[in-house]
Image (cartoon, rainbow, N blue to C red; front, side, top):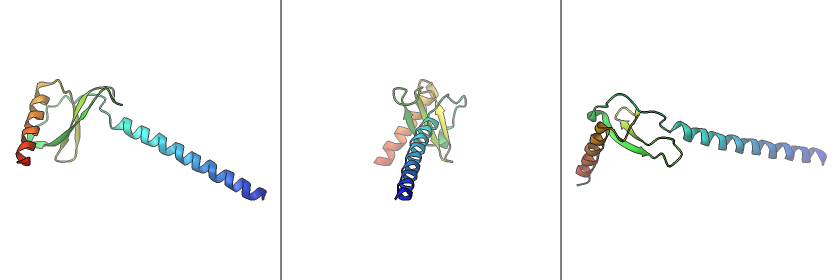
Length: 100
């Protein structure tokens, strides 16, 4: 009976440890997805296929536009930069044309 109790205790401890590791991993994963700085390179419009917006009011520290390239790369850009605004307008117009 004592052997069964100790096995149960070990199993519960292992499950608790796995749960802690999973929670820690998901938190670290979300921090890696945040932009911490902006690119200094102006991206060519032809290389872009889309974007996502990062808000500073959420988990991340700075607001950013995350451009997604046709090659699968991501680049963080300052949403206040003129070239970024123009690229966003270009992408939204392309999306409207596709919806028609």
